Length: 218
Image 1 (cartoon, rainbow, N blue to C red):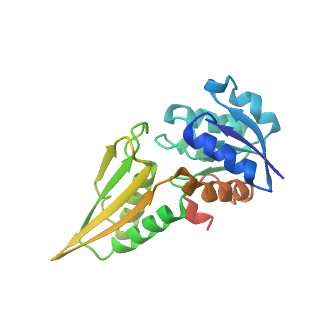
Image 2: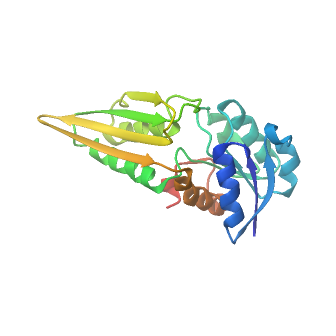
């Protein structure tokens, strides 16, 4: 049984993660950390094997460092922060998922492959109006993989924040006389839960840390 605590448990993603962990036969939800609940991360760490973090860009890094120092593995879904300090952190493993939806991982993979053959590309990412970071972690990760695939510059990213959206991204390619669009839409936060649970199950066995991208666990 994997003991799991959730940081940011009162948020929409955090609450969905709590429900998913509760419903998993091989996991036990042992703690919910959130200022709105009056519970700190330090209070839930002693009972956890893994912490799932869906908080804010300004708290994700301190949270992860606190988890690793306590010997607790951490799965991070928060984006918009610098993960470099985690490369020298020892004591537990860190997994960062720019996106936990399987379809989004495939979109990124297909975009990196298409970038080798099309002349130019731009990325449009659309999220709900409460998302704090721009661009999204998914868009930044996609652009990085596209640049690596071509050995060139990363494509431009356009960010849209509107009520009514969840998480959406399209990569638009252009070449002589043609265009190609690769798009993924998460219309419900439940789309992220299989990926989150996969990361929780696999984080303890990572051969290196941190690992970035769900594609490394599939």
